[in-house]
Image (cartoon, rainbow, N blue to C red; front, side, top):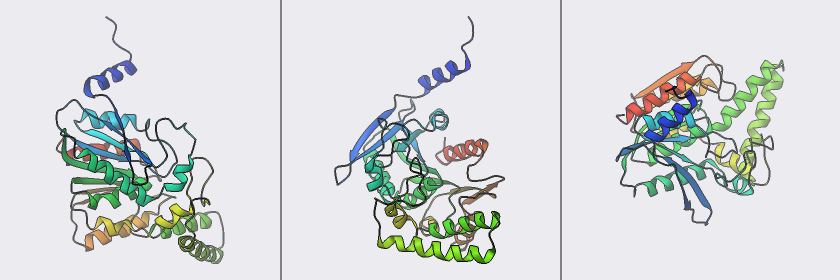
Length: 304
């Protein structure tokens, strides 16, 4: 008999290792819906790896299939939670009004906490989880980790965290202006103006105006910025009683590498000794092999 083509072997492996994808819904206090997806292994008992996406307005229902395959093959379940307004029925590229009205980092944290609270009723879950996120997803992972006693590990990719998010934005913009040839004095003026603008958004946290958006996938409202600008991940991570793995590219143009260096200094000063730092040559997106290593690390934290 002829061997199956590679793509069919992968599909067969998934069918053997994994149960059906569970797509479920919870209601927030305002009656809007939280959509989440649980890819389960065949084991009667399993741990969770929570995958947290970045800042794009893009449904997560069909993202990360390769990572989910690795997690499920490792004996854990993979959990993904949609941002407000997004679900499997939203066309790729559409950004619903509900997303613009409700999406903030804090809302994502609350949604995740609600979903985990619901999953506590699931007898198959053994009560352990690892949070894994990149960019804004790292922000959500860091903020949520100390709120969940089930946390056994946290993976942060390109998340910075030693500076406030607003200062990270200012420093990244300043570096790009210098690289473009702008005079240092002019760059300093622009940075002062940007700091003032970002801090002023707290006085006008409207979901009907946007900044730093492209009108397509990057849709950050004044409301989102008002909630994000003062966040400093070190404030949350000092309270995490679980190992932390940090990945960051030394040439990252989106989140300053220095912000992660400051985070490491602060965590060391606070007495936290279970932090592993893996810098890599490159920018904001880690190389695929580093992500695979991070998934292996997450599964090891869960004993898988």
